[in-house]
Amino acid sequence: MLPGLTCRPLTADDAAAWWWLLERAAAVDRPHVRDSEEWLRRTLTGEGFDAATQTVGGWDAAGELRAVGVVELRLGDVGHLRLPFDGVVDPAWRGRGVGRDLFAWAERTARARAAARRRELGAPVGADLQVWAPEHREDVFALCRRAGLQVRRYFSRMRQDLRSGPPSPPVLAPGYRLVDHAPQGLREVHNEVFADHWGSQPLTASDWSRFVVGNPEFRPDWSFLVVHGADVAGYANVYAHESDWPGLGFPQADLGNLGVRREHRGRGLARALLAAVAGRAHAAGMAAVALDVDSANASGAVGLYERAGYVRVHGDVLHTKPV
Image 1 (cartoon, one colour):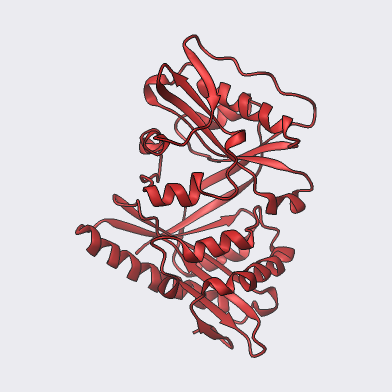
Image 2 (cartoon, rainbow, N blue to C red):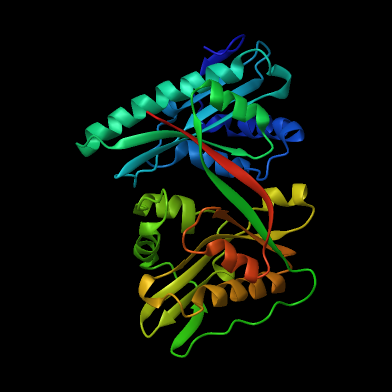
């Protein structure tokens, strides 16, 4: 299936080889983010993820892993199915048709997984194969075009530099309080907040645990809630992606989720949460806080972040194809 390679699905035991393949590729590809070996192992063993049908690895004659393909599907996707494809080919094996065949495998796998999910839901919901690529990866763009994927959306990586000194303290409207993070009931708040965001689907309890509060990189001590009486009005979830720090040359906090409930918007709560996160990150020795934002976000998020001191550092391009 992959030219010159022996193929089989990945298992949890392959996480170390997968990580080493990604490290070899990173020297050439200059990725914006780096996955840890533990995160890769969690991917292969996550609830609802079937590595036997959703992964492929290609090994050379010497037993070295040279290519990997993974197609995922969030369990919470019900209105529209998103099937992200993540693939990597060892730089020494590029130009031999391996990447092209990985894309073909990904489309077949996504179609099969989408069909199975439609049967589970009992509904003919739409589905897209998705490929996220850094804006400098023209080689990936070419593979996407050849496979029939089209550019769907642009996202920006933004960063606030904290090295010039302590940031300004948060200012809250009367009746609101900043409190330390507590995850109880927050999944429902998150799903409510992001219900009107492009491409968003509700997170199941399993996905919330796996990707959000159960993520080993989650830092509840850098995260906050804004409360109004007994109600959560807004929240900020923050992470420490330490595998990215060597490539950056400095430690940074990553703001994964920032949300304010509709009835509490327009009161400066998002701005206060950003200031609180910046202050906590600075106190922890972080040189910056970074986040990702949809460049076409209709809520004015890009302007909010710019006013808080964030600047764009690079971008990612989402390519999709109906399956």
